[in-house]
Amino acid sequence: MIVFSAILVLTVISVYTFFRKIDASRKPSLLAWFIIAVTAAISLGSYLAHAEFSDEGIVRGALFFANSGASIAIFMRLLYLGGYNPRLSTFDKVSGIAACLIILYWFVSADSFGANLSTQGLMVISYVLITKRVIESRGKSDDSRFWVLAFLMSILSVVSIWDGEVLEGVNTIRSIFSTGIVLGTIYYYRVRYH
Image (cartoon, rainbow, N blue to C red; front, top):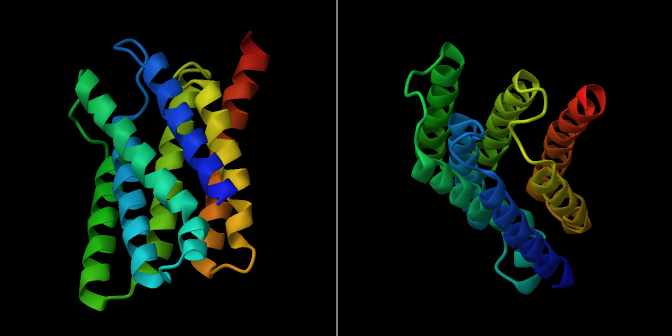
């Protein structure tokens, strides 16, 4: 329960940090956060459909809860700020279609495990969008403190994969690598250009 509480506290602090640093002049990728919010919600739903409802099962799913709540809050904040270009690139359209196909697959097949694994792949795509934006802005589009906290949440959730299920393991490993790559890219540009 300590790990679950720590992850939730880090989630609240990271969202607060994100909100403080984002304004009309410094906005991360809206599409990436939309994809993360949708896929995190799908992951949480499919985890809950697959998980056992016990204190231990909920604690093992702490990262699912944290990712879902934080990403939805961040996406809503970005929508509130507005000012985004509504034109979608080919990559954006393919990502949107992939999200719809995963949802359709889940409802048609009732395979929550397969849907969750698919959403993890889609989350990787959204982190590629974030990393691309960090590269284009030379590390200025995203706040490093937010990504440090996100990375720490991922590291703490390693506890959830001990004696856990495959879904927790895949989510945790994907989260560690995804947040680590974004954070590493931010620091690369901070060191190189500052």
